[in-house]
Structures are given as C-alpha cells and as structure tokens.
Amino acid sequence: MTTWTIDPVHTQIEFSVRHMGLSTVRGRFRSFGGTVTADESGAPAAVAVDIESASIDTSAADRDAHLRSPDFFDAAAHPTLTFRSTGVRAIGGNRFEVVGDLTMHGVTRPITLEADIGEPVRDPWGRQRRAAVVAGKLNRKDFGLTWNQILEAGALLVGEEVRLTFDVQVTSSEAAVETVSA
Image 1 (cartoon, rainbow, N blue to C red):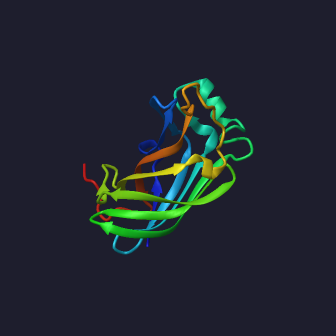
Image 2 (cartoon, rainbow, N blue to C red):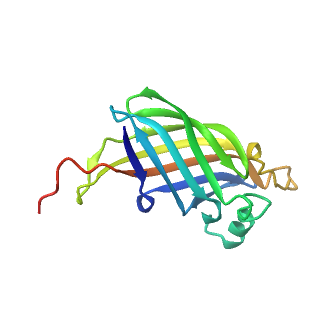
Image 3 (cartoon, helix red, strand yellow):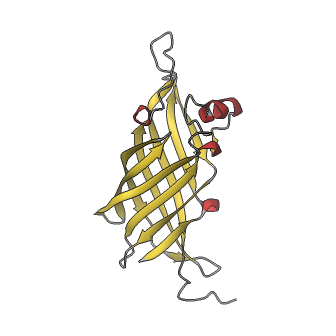
C-alpha cells in the first residue's frame, strides 16, 4: 500500500449551485487536507479528506459570511467537513467510483463520487505525484442546509443540488525511485 497526501497548493475543492433559478454561483474551500491510500496496483483503496468549513470562498464577502452562519454551514459549531471512503470500485480505464460518508453541518450521509485518475509522474524535485479529477453531486437539504427563500416567480433563491468538482494533486510518502540529475 502507498499513501498519497493531498497537495493543497495544487488542489482545488470547488462547488456550484443555482442562484435564483437564473445562474450558477461557484465557490471553493481554501483550507483542507487528506490522503489517498493506493493498493499494490496503484488503484485507490481508501480516501480521507478534511475541509475547514470557514474557508469557504465565493468571491463575495457578504455571501461567504452568510454561508458560514447557522443558516448554512454553521462553521463555529461544525468547523470541519469530512469525507471517508467506504468503498472504491473500478469502472473502466483509470476511472473509479468512490463511495463514502460525507459529514457536513453535523450530518453524515453517503455520497458517490467519480474519479478519473492520471498516471504517476516524477516532479522536478524527485517526488512522485498523481492527479485526479473528481466529480459528484448532493442535495444540500440532506445535510440540514435548508435555509432558502422562494422568489416572487416561485424560483428558489438557492438551488438544492450542489455539484462538486475536485482537481486534486497528491504526492507519495515514498521516495521517488530515481532522482533528478542536474
């Protein structure tokens, strides 16, 4: 087994949600960490991710403050979102279905993500790296994030479906087999 650690400098954890039924608001979390354990073949076997809820950033300070409040994430009471895989299944090529428990706002529910994983490469400093694009969706109401307003035309101010997209780079805890020569 090999343990890979998320590289926060080269990783984006992003989400998108419909706003007023008109457009999509996108945001990200700025502070997170985690690991991926791979089996002998290099396939992911376990994933663990921790995200600081207060690190939410939608590029709008007032909206971010509202999202940190008890109406949404209640970051003071629930400072961390966690994901722990419960199973990983190959679905063809370098694609995997990752099933796990997401805990958000004090509620734990299963979610399914799809990961497209790149081959390992050696960076210029001799470290082994891998990258993956991970996607999924969830209903925010399933996690107790129920605040909303119905607009005059009947649309919801905040959509219920949240799309998740993670562009992840990880580094191996094991030393690279070769070193870079100058």
